[in-house]
Each structure stands twice: as C-alpha cells, then as structure tokens.
Image (cartoon, rainbow, N blue to C red; front, side):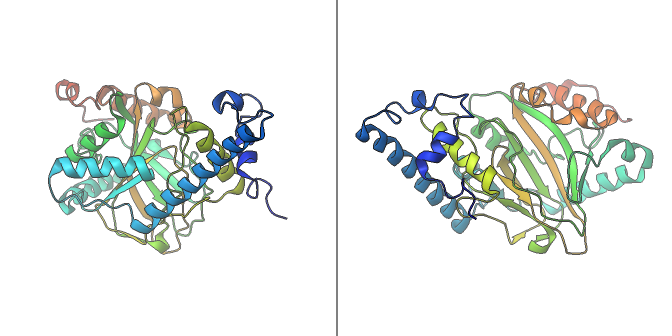
Length: 337
C-alpha cells in the first residue's frame, strides 16, 4: 500500500504541515481554508506551484551540479558559491584546499592518533550511527587556526555572504570517519529548524568515490524562514520525513577529489551512503552556526567530557561576530591537552 503522505495531494500536505494543530495554517495562507471554492482553489494552486518549483530547483541542482570553480576573481567566486548554497542548499569547491594544506592536516591528525590516551578521550562513537564515528579536535597547534580547519579566507568570505547580517561562529570541529563496511544512513537534517542557522564545512582528506559512501543530498530542502515560503517548505519537509526519500531529484557526487570543500546548510535533508570500498572514508568536519545557535542546539551535550572542554575553547576563540577572526590573534596559544 502506498504511503498516505507520499501520495497526498498538495492541500493535504499543507494541512499536515500545521504541526498537529499547533500552527494555524489559515493564518499563514489567508482564504485557503475558507468555504469559498475560489479561495480554497487559490491555496491549493499556490502549494502545487511551490512543489513544482521545488522539484524544478532539485532537478537543476542535481543535473547541473553544485560545483563552483575557485579560479577567477575572488568576489565572483564568493558570490557564485553563496548563491549556489542559498539555492541548492549545498555547494562544492574543488581545490579549495591545496594538496600541501591537506598533507599538513593529515600529519596533524596522525599525530593526534599517536597519542592514544588523548585520542581515546576525544573519540565519539555514540552520536553517529551505521558505522560512523568522529574524533573531536583539540584546541591545540595546529588545529587552533581557522585555515587548518578548512575555513580559509575564501570559505570565510562565502560564509559571511551566506549569513549576511547575522553573526556567526564555530559550533565544533572533528574528523568524521565512515568505516568499511558501513551502511546507508537514514535521511535527516542536522538541525530541525530553519535554513540559514547552521552550515557544515567538509574537507575531503582523500579522493572519495561512490563506493566509499559520499553524502547524498535532497537539494532545495529545509524550512524557509520567510513567512510566505514557510507553509510549502514545511509541507515538503514533513513529506520527506514520512516518505524517507527526496521528493525531487537527489544528488550524490560520483567523485569528490581530495581537497574539495563541501558546504551545506544543516536544515537540508541528507545522508551518508554505505561504504563498501574496503577503506575508511575520512572527512574534516567544521560546523558553524549563527549567533548563539550552537549553544541552543547543544549538539555536543552527549560528547565525551574531554571533547566538550575542547569545543568550549574553540567557541571562545572562534565565536561571533565573524568566527573570532580579530580576537583570536590575541588569545594565548595552548600546546597541551
């Protein structure tokens, strides 16, 4: 039998997105739920148009790709990347991290792994699932610089364009590993709120092929904060949750070269695909949030105590208004855990 939500009409999805009666959808779509046939038809047509628009957007992002070349005038690259992130929910920047930079990151991570006691204290095998785990990074040299975390000047400029007038700062930094074998994750957003509150910055530490389990995206998903866009985006979100699949076309990069930086909005639906390559897949993960959102989200509440301590140091150094890029230079540099 077909899932009743997946086979729902646009107006049924709109009604269902009202939060089990907690939201008055009539207030969001005046006239859409009245007795007038004309008014009701207008609301249904609006939602159908929004759903068609969503599918068109997803198709464009999936078929046209989300890569933006980092060559060319910086202002142009920043504008293109931020626009792609706003439209598709994700952007990929091949060669945003050069080989020498990735080499230095890998050496630093290898050094951390060699310190068994410290590494184990920062290891998190609880928050992730389906064969994934992460190691929170310590606020020590060389990890206590934005550049090593994947937030070079170009990435920072893109984040500033994307967040606009909102302050933003670091949530946490870690190395995320998908072991092999590992299974497909279920579709999920990282944050259950609106778009524009949190983003993930992933740096590929190796060439990632399809059988290594890249991130699979549902482009153009996530609840909109704009009043006139919210009802349709909330209905689409509910349908994806119930159907456990994208409503439009999906996007799973066939090949992500080493050094590629992928930025995606945390409200976007995504999942890690299964890794059956025989090799673990490693990603440098930096999460960034607006204002005090990292504290309110409290993602690291279940992280190991040693990890929470390091997260607090990162947030102090690289917090609002702009990742602490001015204050960080005057902070004392610690060299031990």
